[in-house]
Each structure stands twice: as structure tokens, then as C-alpha cells.
Length: 299
Length: 314
Image (tube, rainbow over all chains, first blue to last red; front, side, top):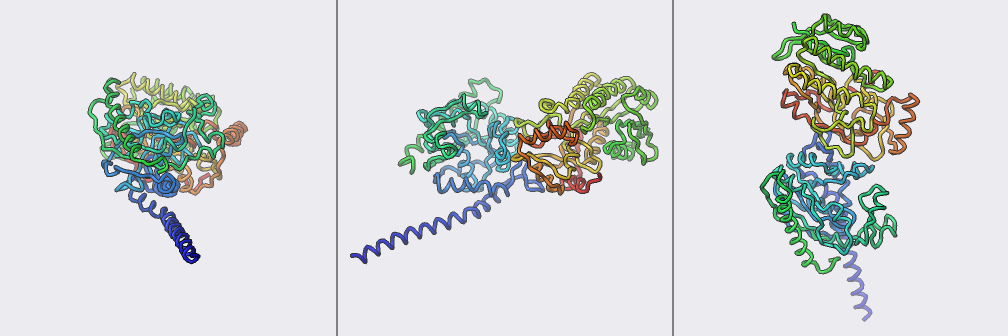
């Protein structure tokens, strides 16, 4: 009796220590895996190892490590549809949620870790990010930029993969009662796609809405602090900076089939809006699919 | 022989242009070179006539009257901040205004003006790789740059008013070279170069000989218009300083403004606080228009441009 209990106990602890050592082996090999993937990203580097927008594979190998850990072991992202990514230029258009832009970081990590070949995602940052110390450098070195129209056009013409969230802060800082409701989409991305003849890949992220549910958005306080918004969540600002940590929800990311549109970039708003609505509908459908497929917000 | 007048000929860039202009170039004859400068050029090559006086003097017009240059390269700008603002403004803006009047009156056929990509200003909202259509924002946070923006205004008005004169404005990126005495050149030559903590913008650099070459190409091709000249590429500021073998000191941003403004006001340190934005935010330009118009390509790599800054001539 005692013997069999001991046997059971040792098999459990052995199992745990096996999986712990397996996990630590995986964790330890991640930086090497990342380095291999980053080296395969096609990039137009100069003699000093920077691309024209400041992307540096060397810096990327370091800076993407936290994202990669979050991607694999914290949000345990389940990603589908990466085979849909076209070659050359594309616009990744996604839903934006969760107070902190982990969705952008996870989409970036997915495209580096799991796409074949790995792709560098060019985020279009808010203007104020460029004014923050370290953040502006981090943006540049990992391939993103402060998102101005002409920069976006240049990047697309250069064959880059540009990511944009047309909901902007409207989506990111919405309260939890509006979870998974897509906010109003800006029209700019569609005009850019038409101008540069770029396919649009709708990307849905399920999970981000639950990572840090917003109770309210104190825009006035945000304004005073020079931020576009000031979210109040279950944990922020009550726990200080710790309160910005997301819950370990599970992410489901789906890359949809590329959508191609015809028309002129200068068309009337109505005609652009109709095209934007198609993209929005595609993302909505993917979101519904993703939410139906998950067992709980943590799995 | 066609005559070329170079203002500010005794400066580093002026000497380079003069020497290049005296050589025959593919498809064009050598120029006979005449120069104006307040400084002496003791080792001027034979055949170069240097009129030594201040351009603000009336004798400036006499040069046009007697020499009758066919083309003018205008380099006589105060580009450092050692001079007081009034003098800087007088030389840069008033000097250019008189020059333009003389060009129109004495039958000049071609005019090349050396401006700077700094006229766009360094703003966090800047596009990466601005085209010539981008508004000139430098004076917004950098009043010391107002005069260069005014010069550009004068020259572009002149450009449209006198279509028969091939007027060309060149806006090169940060120019590096043995003879560069611009604000950025002096900044990068400091024993201990201050940078702003947490900021490291992409910067474009060009070798001084390539800037001179760009002006010569503009003359050869008789191009009209305003052109960015971008050089071989961009690297982060701190990497550039490392390549030049400079020691850096990182200063937190709010502190940097206070410190640099104080030192500037005390006349200890010749880097106005408005220039801080240029070491924080990107000010990069694209030069497709110039390449298309002239076929210009920089000959020197970034490494060669950095190498010119390795040994301080001061």
C-alpha cells in the first residue's frame, strides 16, 4: 500500500520534473530558434546592418525574446492561416484591444516564429510613441515606425508587410462591455491599399479583450499625462505599473485569406467605406469563429 | 571660357567645388573660376581669382558687373552658431537677396544654392524620407534655422520669377568631411559628444566631395528646381558616432535642454538647444527627384564619410 503510494508519488514528481526539464530545455533553446528565424527574414540591410527605417536583425534577436516567451508560454498563442500570407507587400488589418498593444506584439511574433519564410511586420505606431525615450528606439530597431501616410506608402512600395489597427485607440481602450465589438474603422488603410495595389490580410485576435478588461477610460486624465487615453481596469491604476500586466489568457490568432480591392485611392468616402466594411466583416467572422472554438478564456 | 562665380569660395566646400569646376568633366568644358569670400584662400590654384571682401559690401555688385559670370554657386552661408543671430541673418538672408538681384540683372544663366535637409526640421511626426514637397518646419523649434528657411523662400520665389535662369537648390543631408564646419560637423567633432538618453534617430550622411559633386552635376545638367541629396544611406546617430571613434555621454532629455541652453547662453558650447531635436527625432530625406534629373550617385560610402571625421583637424 505504502509502496504503491510512494511509486505513484515518485511517478508524479518524476513526470513533473520531466516536463519541467523539457520546458526549460525549450525555454533555453528559444533564443537560438529566434536567431535562426530572424536571419531568414528578407531585409534590405546596409553595410552597418540597418535597413532604411532603422530595423536591425541583431537588435531584433534580443528585443523579440520577451514577445516570443509571451507568445509561446504566457498567451500560448494558437495561430492559424499563416499560409495565407502573400509574398511581397501586404497590409495586415486587425482588431485592437486590451489596453496594451500585446496583440501587435503577438502578431509580430507569430510572423517571425511561425510564418514560412519568417516575415518582418511593420507596425505603424502612434505619434506619441516616437516622443518616448527608449520606445522610439525599440520601435525603429524592431521594424516599426511612427505611422505617417507617406512612410506607409514607401514601405508598401518596398514590398514590406505593414500592420495597422484601423480602430486605433478607440479599439484598444474600449470598456469590457464592448468586448469583441469592432469600433469604427478609419478609411486611411483602404486608400493606401488602393493607391499601392496592396492585398489586405484580415487578422483576428481572440483573447486580448480579456487580458486586461477595461472598466472606464478617463480621457481627461490621459490628456493631462499626454497619453491618448487613461484606462481604468480591474488592476490599473490600483496596483500601479503591476496593474498593467495582462492576465494569462489564451490568444487565438487567425490570418484570413488576402483580400484584393480595385478602385481609386481618392474615391468618395461611401465607396471606400463599403470596401472597409468588407474587411471589417471578414475580421468579425474570424472573431466569431475564434470565440466559438475556445473552451474558456484561459484555454 | 565660361565663368563660374563661387561665393564663400575659401570655405571647405567652396574649395572643393572650385577645384572640380576647373577640371573638364564628361560632356562639359572646364570653368574659369572666380570667387568671393571674406577669408583668404592662400593656396588657391592658379587661374582662380578670389575677391576678398564681405559680401554685404557694395563691391559685391562690381564683381558681377566686371566678371559677368555665366553661372553662380552660392555657398556663402554662416552655418555654425558662433556668429550672433543678427550677423548670421544679415549674411545669409540679406546676402542671398543681393545675390539674386545681381544674378537677374547681370545675365547669370545658372544658379546653384547650397541649402540643407535640416530645413525640414526634426519632428517626431516626420515622415521617414521626406520629399521636396514636405513643409519646412525647422524654425518651429529651432529659431536659429529661420534664416536658412528664409533663404529657401527667397530662392524659390526667384526660381519661379526667372524661368530663363536655371536655378537649383540642393538640400544635402548631414555632410561629413575634413573641411566641414557646420553645426553638425562641430557637434560630431567634440571630445565628448552629448546624446539624448533613450533616443537614437536614423541619420543620413554624405561625404563633402559628394556634395560638391552634386553641385557640379546640377551645373552640368542645368537642372532647375529644389532637390534633396541623400548620400549612401542611414544609420542610427550613436552608431555613426561609434564609427567615428567618438566618446558619447547620454543625457536625460529634460536635463539636456537646460544644460545645453545654459552652456550656449554662456557661449561655452556652440550647439543651440533647438538643435537637440536633430539628435532625438528623424530628419531623413529621399532624393529620387535629383537622381532622376541628373543621374547623380554618391561615390563615397558611409564608412568613407565617417573616416573623414576620424582625425580631428582642429
